[in-house]
Amino acid sequence: MIDNYSRYQKGLTLSTLKPSIKGLCACGCGRELTGRQTKWASSECRDNAYVSFAIVKGDNEIIRQELFKRDKGFCCMCGVYDDKWESDHVIPVIFGGSGCALLNFQTLCRDCHKEKTKLQSIWYSKLKQFPDRQPLSFVACVYMPLEKLNISF
Image 1 (cartoon, rainbow, N blue to C red):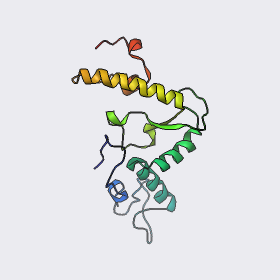
Image 2 (cartoon, helix red, strand yellow; image 1 turned 180 degrees about the vertical axis):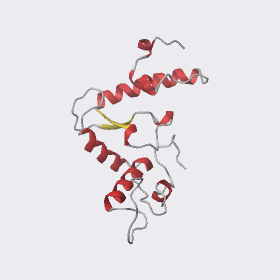
Image 3 (cartoon, one colour; image 1 turned 120 degrees about the vertical axis):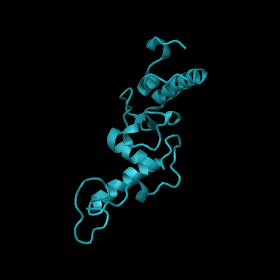
Image 4 (tube, rainbow, N blue to C red; image 1 turned 60 degrees about the vertical axis):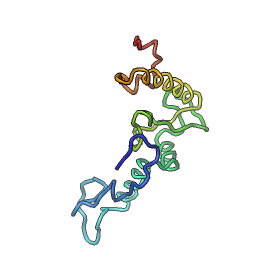
């Protein structure tokens, strides 16, 4: 259903991600459906479900809109405002970080995004040499230079 190694979830539908639950709102809020309601307890539930679906599906426009609401264009690494901010997967797609909620996205300025990408490529090249080893944590592989981790390959 969800491919965590693909940026865009081809074929994923809202009904697959948020199936109808007899008598309850499909968004997961737990509210009972009343009257003529068949899936959503309110328009807010429906709208929130669509936004979360679009993020998981990989809709860049929705992801950027929601990131800006949350982070206001400030870099999550250095704290500087950048009007040309970039959206970034906290856990990289190559490590299974796609098809996730907004929690796996962050706002980065261009300089921090370049630095993070450079560190990830170093980590990835080292990991490919030793396929039986896994990174200690995604946070470490994203933010810590190899020499600061005291790890040798």
